[in-house]
Amino acid sequence: MRAPDFWFKSGDWRAALLRPVAVLYGAIAAFRINRSGFRAPVPVICIGNFTAGGAGKTPTAIAIAAMLKEMGETPVFLTRGYGGSIDGPHMVDVTRDDAATVGDEALLLARVAPVVKSVDRVQGALHASALGSVIVMDDGLQNPSLTKDFSIAVVDGESGIGNGLCIPAGPLRAPLAAQKRRTDAVLIMRPGEADKRLHTALSPRPFWHARLVPDAAALSALQGRKIFAFAGIGRPEKFFAMLEREGLAIAERRAFADHAPYDKDTLIAIAQQCQRDGLIPVTTEKDAVRMGPLLQNASGLASLAVVPVVCEISDRAAITATIMAALARRLTQRPT
Image (cartoon, rainbow, N blue to C red; front, top):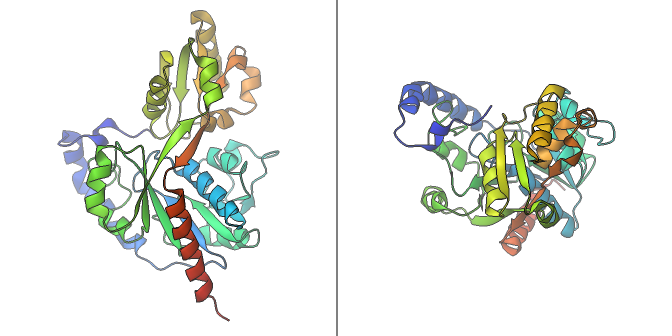
């Protein structure tokens, strides 16, 4: 699914038409989010977001896991593995698993730390608890099945929470007030106008800031070349805008639905257009892992350029201190 444009506009007639359904959806989501959850044997840090669509959760989860390693912890990722066919609990193996079985995000996370893919979060947490000292949940802010020791909501500083309405009239997964009660801190990705508005709505929670930084070597290799940019992520236009900010010349762009699987015919069509028009195909890491072995069969995509991004956090010292305090609180709560 791609986020509709009207989710990020005020006063759109489509949002008004869908508002009664959104109110009902929001009421059900708010009721669900307030339920008590299972407390895992080890601390759980949740990296989620308020809205449907990409805000940068997975790069943030990777950055937080790296920080935990610096603290001497052994993080283990827990993910639902959206788009993967295995229910789990399943220990992700990048040498055997593919996006069709475990989801694209799980494969990216597994490059950094062990990953447990599980639709049932409780069973997944029990499995993950035997593998490390801290669970890092990629997504799941609205899921009540697990008690979180610390929850970070990642928000795009430009789009924010859109029109402020719940699905399907807007991008919110649950009413902001209900999600606020389950949020300990907010990480703003790309500070913008929405950043200022959210400070008022979510005070007094701490606000941290970060940005997604594209790989310099990948960008350098594309300078002066005409490119065909394509992506199937939460908001593909963010990827295209990032490339243009870095000075790349996009001659053609194509947006696919988030997590959409690629097929051979689609990739061959892209490859043929690139060969015909002298373009370099460019995509995201998340898209590349979904292509897998299909790339070998799409003649012409041997030149595919992948532009990885990393989450560069500005407030590392503050985040480190806050997470360490949360872990210490959990230690004091353990029975002796």
